[in-house]
Structures are given as C-alpha cells and as structure tokens.
Amino acid sequence: MSDLERRKDEAIRRIGKEAVDVLKEAGIDVESAVRSILRGQQEEEGRQELETAVATTDNCMTSELAYRSTKIEDMFGKEYVRRLRLMGLSDKDISNLYGQEKSIASSDVGREQAWVRRYFIMPDTTPETLPKPEELTLSELILITDDANSAFYRDHEHLPDKAWEALCIAACCASYTEARYVKAFDERISGLGWSKTQNGAYTRNECLLTERFKWGNHNDPAWTKETTDLKKFER
Image (cartoon, rainbow, N blue to C red):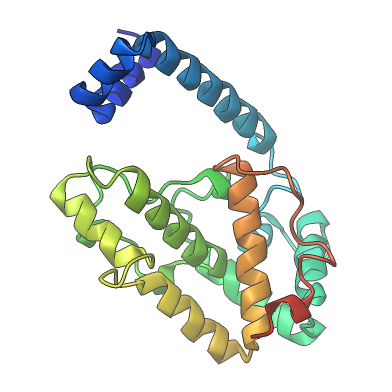
C-alpha cells in the first residue's frame, strides 16, 4: 500500500463511518476528495522541505544561527546579531548570549537537520525521553512547545498514553498542561534581563518561522523591523 493510500485510509477512519455515509449519500466521492486533499498537502510539504533543505539566514531559527556559525562575525553570526539588535539588546548582551547558546547546542542531538521542521512529540515519546530544559536553546524551548501544542489538537486521539503524557508536559495550550518549556524559557529570559516586550518579540518572530516553514500557514517574513517593533508587544 502506498503512503498516500495509507494516509487516505487513516483520514477516512478519523472522519468516521457515519459521517462518511452521510457524505456518500450526498453524492460526494469521499475517497477521491481525501486523496486530492492529501496530494495537495504532500506538494506543500515538499515545497517546505525544499525551502529548508539548505540552511540560510532566512530559514534558520535564531539559536540555530549561533549553532551553525563558526564565529559571530560570519554570515550566520551577523544575522544572529542583527536580529537581537532589532530587539534593543546591546552588543555585550548579544555576545554573552551567543556564547551561552553555542555551549548548550554543542551536544549535537538531532541539530543538523533544519530546526524549524523538527518534531519532538512522536508516538514513541515518553516523559522519560523528553529533553531537559537546560539541554535546549531558547529557540528549541519554543520549538518543542509549538510542536506539542500542534500535536495536542492534531494527534490527541491517536497518540499512545505515554506520548500523550509527554505532550501534556510540553504543551501550554490547556489548563492541565504543564508548560514545562515555556516556564523554562520565561525563567531564562528573566535571568537575561529581557523585558516582557522583548520576550514577546522574540517568541512571535520565532513562531513566524515555524508557521511558515513547518506548518505552511503563510509566506510572511520574520525578524524585520516591523515584526520586532516592541510597541506591538506592550500590554
């Protein structure tokens, strides 16, 4: 069975027999409709993979720039500095954070692939296999939370109990989720002396990257003067 047919059968199973029967009675070819939707999704996923096949200053997460740079003066390092300057950080603070992020990322665990398309919550994930917050860079703390939040809505009916338990530890989208990594992010940011508006600007721009290159929600740029305008994050 092809991957498309497998995904088609799974999608129809999720729709449910009763709903499928209603659609068929209305004259809708459910299997053909689902195949068409899935083909479109595959094409979009292929486009996103192509866009992130080679790391560039446009498709890298901010901590990933530090990881991929050899020194702060090279292409990735300069982009790292540019982004954080947009948020009003001093060169000294940027240099200190750069060193901290490179140190954390020095343990290369799945970091060679495009960060923006990494998945942390899988069927075999358990609370015990979740990374410790101190093992993750700032961008990765956002990435794992974003991935868990997405899986909360997308996969909640299909994840094994242990994976669901891990998801609820990582996610921050319900009152009963632990938000472990959001809390760690906020604590680390607070320790760095960032303001709430800087926190908001960093988080939003990193999420703009995942929304574009992982989820295909838009084609808007991130880390521009407009998207980092701190006034937009005042509450």
